[in-house]
Image (cartoon, rainbow, N blue to C red; front, side):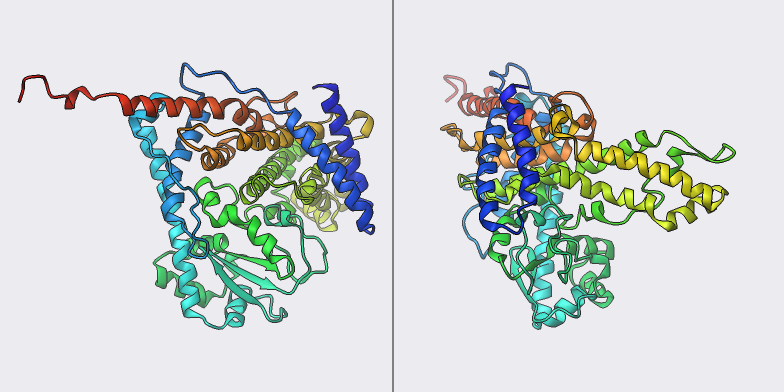
Length: 507
């Protein structure tokens, strides 16, 4: 990594920490924000990889699958997901390619392409069911307060709630202070802990009034499990202050991109990251030797890494989704100060690892371990104290490395993976479109599908930048694959099929 990039990473790491200390100084924080946004932009653009040259063969399979899914998704965005409240076309002119063209350009077989098309159609069908569900709720209940109580049974103290529809989504708006727009995609960002309801983590389909769920099952013809899933894709809660900004940021979901890519749906998809955990979640049998007498520890740090790695994987997925939503909602605009929160990865990592640390410190965990292993509570407490000490040190190593060693930390790598994705998406959106077709909507779909299909946890702990991470893969492969696809379409349009050629002299 170049010295300039390392210096920018360190400035960003130090600056984000200083920013948190200036919460009571709005003017000073605004100055810091401007400097940090400049640092973020220069860092992101410095990491953009050079695209591959023209492709003489089909691209890698994961790239080919993401491109095929993106192509099959476009017609649905053009016709299926039109929002009557916002008639502007999502995709002015969808790209439609035959199986023969996709086979030639992407190297996928016909049966694979058919399976991918059917999967996209199935996802699009869920969006139509969402629309039916919202229409049913609005036509059945004309009293917003009554419907709010049925959707949020535990929120009776909320005064004067509002419910309004945007496309296939139903927004509950309550009187609460404004929150960061990142809370729409990062559910562990709750802001003020004294607020009445937290965003994203305040609605659960299984807690909805049972009578309403039964009526929905009959009304739209779905099982209760499907109704719960549809409700969690449809309903969310927003604060009245700053609601317009939140609605703009939620266009990724409203316009159907989240539905067809599965990135960003349902609303509470990742809220489990900040919830309390139990013994099964911390995989206690991996780090306790119950066959020993007395019970002894067995390498608790690797077990911690295995659990934490999966959690960080989901954190990065949420950060990628938030960036996609920002670029889709506000193309070509200046960076929003809320974007700085995305780069505060140390805080995000700390937040999603804290439930594991709370479990080993809890008194109930001592009792549980003692009963499960047949050891004394005193010995169980000693074991968990040592586990907590080692896990805390490992969590600090991951989320709060010393600035002097930050360049070589895993946190610096994660910040870099986010920055390269940020820079690649912006550079591709700013690139002059091919005169044959505009690539903007296809790029968003391609990126979303690639993120959904990419096993990012494989590269989280590796040294260096893995070429399969979304930023590097999209930066190197999207444009050459896009050009190869357009060339194949152009070739098909200018090729005469011999089966339909009339021989000379036949008539």
